[in-house]
Amino acid sequence: MQNIHFETGKQRFTINGDESKYIEFNPNDDGILTRLRNIQNEIEKRQNELSKIERVDREKTTSMLSDLDKFIRNKIDYLFDSDVSNIVFGNTSCLSTLNGVPLYERFIDAVLPILEKNIKTEMKKSNTRIEKYAGKYVK
Image (cartoon, rainbow, N blue to C red; front, side):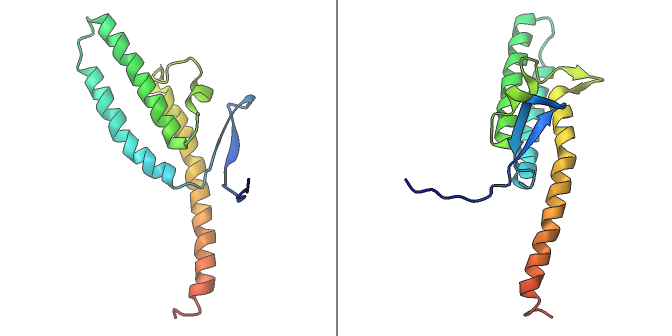
């Protein structure tokens, strides 16, 4: 079978310094930011639905929390185009909070600076390359 080999840009990142827990994704993929914008609205809509139910119905609340956790995990995996959520969150609910901020948001907040830095660097490199060729024709 023939093979097509090219650099994908994927890099490995450990989770909280634990070498046995790592994820791989392309930190130069500006598509992650686009996908993030798209899923943020979906997640907020689901969270708003949850906030409308009566807390008295414990079974319904538990079921909805579990469904929301699965929904967000699936969206996180979609965001990074790989099985990231199980590695990052393990058995802990991605909705568990610390100082009122859910775990999945803390994870996204930790990744965003990496994405922003790498995408900005890649844009500069790309612009330099484009100017090298376009500069001959545009003055």
